Length: 97
View 1 (cartoon, one colour):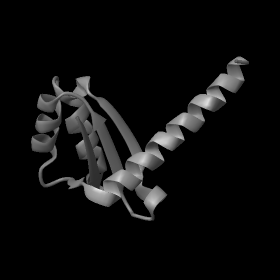
View 2 (view 1 turned 90 degrees about the vertical axis):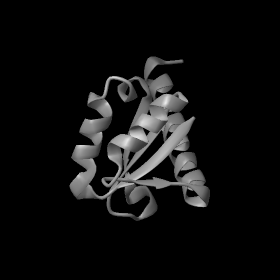
View 3 (view 1 turned 135 degrees about the vertical axis):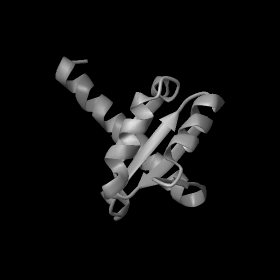
């Protein structure tokens, strides 16, 4: 399962802290990215993990971040994955592979 959250800048530190300090949720893959990639002022949190980790994350950030779904989610997740692939390609060039 995955979950895309958007947080306004003033809440992003609280959201990050809650997600990373929780024993269950911290075991999920958590990617944090400035929302300027979509011309928004805030931060995206993209989580991949088991259903229980995703549900717990939703509970933890209720009122601090909004869940993104539909076309916007597809667009943002695609951008995040493309960025990650480019970074991995660059890393491969550094290692000479």
